[in-house]
Image (cartoon, rainbow, N blue to C red; front, top):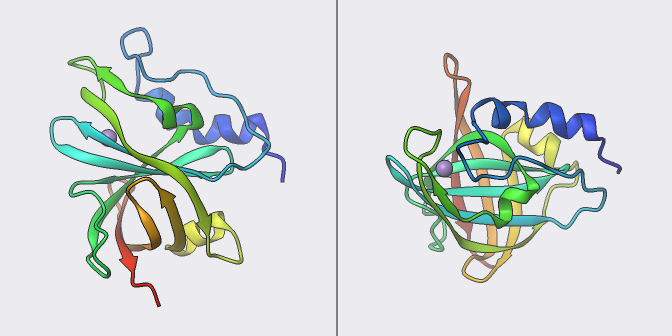
Length: 170
Ligand code: MN
């Protein structure tokens, strides 16, 4: 499926609106990618509160969650994951320091990176809508079958709470 520039642009509006690219070194530009490479990345983000940002490439953007404790490789150990705004694909390579006073101020480093294989017949968008997503991570540190399950939508903030956990190998 081809990914239109407009679709990515619309999805990335919240990302752009929150940032001042004259002050933040974060990626400002994005290129629409026609081919799927199924990237995933986990970035350690030492912001006001240390957390890990988990991102999956879906339709030319990185669908993202902030995970306070990071992901666990212990099967069924559920960690809270808060859905955040979609990020440009270029963000998967980003490491650096976001200056004081800027959104997400603090340092970002790549904790793990690789590819993932979706285990959803109807595709990632539908699974995100339904609030349940199963996939295989093929990273340096993170390997195996994982699931993300939405537990609640916070009405006033628009944020969604999910749980991420590993599923035991058979
Ligand atoms: Mn973050």
